[in-house]
Amino acid sequence: MFSPVAQTRKSSGLSQHDLAILADVGLSTLVAIESGALKPNDKVLRALEKLGADSEGIKDAHNRFVEAKRKAIEARLQAAS
Image 1 (cartoon, one colour):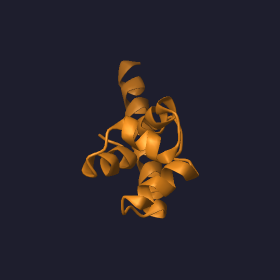
Image 2 (cartoon, one colour; image 1 turned 60 degrees about the vertical axis):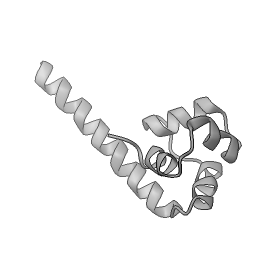
Image 3 (cartoon, one colour; image 1 turned 135 degrees about the vertical axis):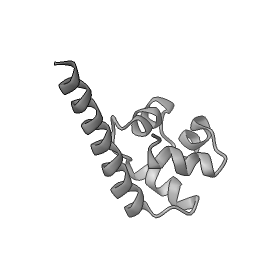
């Protein structure tokens, strides 16, 4: 399962480092966004728009991605108890 930010980045042929530079954010920030720990910030959304992405679509897809991850974690915890 890849985040919509990672999917957009990969389909554009960019590395995480490349997108971090394009967005003017730290690499650790981008990694946290792609893992779902942080929401995409305005700088990252603007950089993705330069790649042809719809920022509102990215935000909506990111929220669904995080919710799916949360449900998977809850299911694993439920199964372990």
